[in-house]
Amino acid sequence: MKAKFTFVCFIICFIVNAQSLQEQELNNLYSSKKTDQLIDKAIEYLKSDPDNLNYNVILGRTLTEIGNYNEALPYLQFAVDNGDSSGKELGLGFLGICYYMLSDFEKSESALRACINLNTSHNANEISARVAGLLGYEEFYNDWKVVESNNFCFHFQNMDDTEIRRYVESREKAFKEINTFFESSLPKKIDFFVWDSREDAKRILHKDLGFAEPAYCIIHSYFNQSKGHEITHVISHYTWAISEKTRFINEGTAVCFDQTNQNRLNKVKYWIRTNDKRIEIRDFWQNGREYSEEVLYPLAGLFVQELIEKFGREKFLEFFKNQSYENAQVVYGMELFMFIKEFENRINP
Image 1 (cartoon, rainbow, N blue to C red):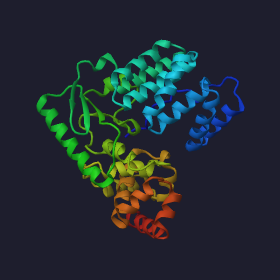
Image 2: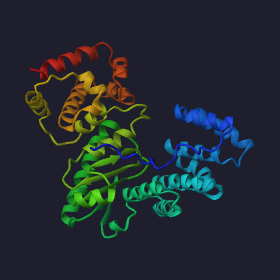
Image 3: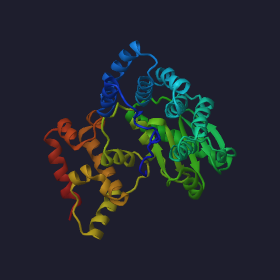
Image 4: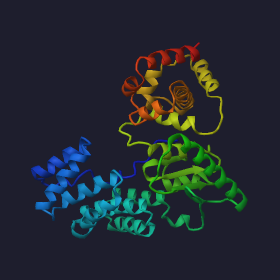
């Protein structure tokens, strides 16, 4: 529910020593998100210069970020075996991610611990430690109960067996119901951390509960948070290769499927009365970061629910991979304008 932790924020964008024209080209392709071209060019350049550290790092990193974890391993391992301290740090950080996504948790933890032990900089060391906490590699988790089910690996801080059974059953049911709509295929089971203490979570994770890291199938949640919100974030992430997310649509989708049955319309109208303001959907859509959860979540959830009811599942999934207002106009056409106008007229005084 909160702002997402950037999983690889501790990774330096590129090794910034003197670069050849080819290295600058790869860096530019990465910055412009031209992934296919970058991969083709990096492979081409490696054929004539296989020991080039930068080529190996950027190719391994890019393959990791698009989910080709097995393919990324040899390039990242090259950086670990042949790089200077920065190259090793880059390689180990991404190896930790790859092995995690391949469910080889022993190698994942080993790589991240080695990254931390390099101690190349205070900032890199601190953030690497946070990632280890995020993945459950801290000693703090040693006495937690771990329960695997069809779609989850649950980690419980403090819950008795009866409560655990009910919790697992309810989340498995939520997963099944949500994925009936999205029909996603996840690369691994969701690691679902269920906290009993928000204070402990803040200390270990350095952020407030609850939240998901959808690309890496991770959820950290307080025990009594909604059944479906964070699960929806993870499932929906793997529906398409999503080129653009917006807070309004992405959070609205999670709220729509959160299974709380809250009266979102009443919440929105209460906010309008209390703040003496009118709702303009386009503004919330394009400037979602400027609005609090108090109004954006129920408004966006209500909007997404009615958007699906009006235009259907297939149209919504087609649109969902690029959640911008501009793409919505392309997918839904002129009917979108009328839909938004009617929606605004109904909720505004």
